Amino acid sequence: MPVWQPPVLHDPYMGLSITSFVCGILSLIGCFAVGPFAFLPALIGVVTGEIAAAKYRHSTIRSSGRGLAIAGRIMSWIGVAIGLAFLAVILIAMVNS
Image (cartoon, rainbow, N blue to C red; front, side):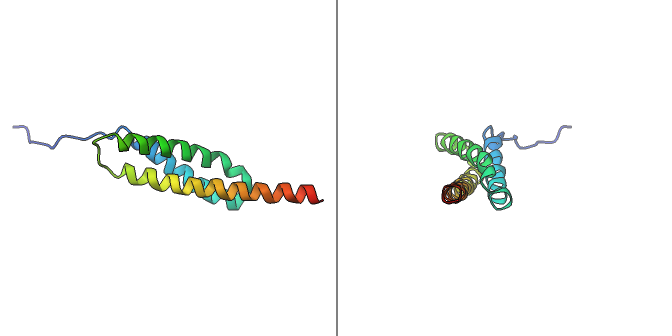
């Protein structure tokens, strides 16, 4: 006799959220390790985080992916700011030398 199992809910936006979160972490770590070269993961994190947050905003799905998208967006924007600051310092140093 088959046992009843609850339906499996699939979150189609979880991949975007995880991508944003991981890129946000990489951008923060990379900014301090390699300076402005961590700018690319930060931009990817911002874009995927914005897309995921917009999809969750217009969806009835309530999952932890929304929180991951918000955290990824925040970390990515911080990574963008730090990367731009490093880039500005490098450009100023090049101009003054």
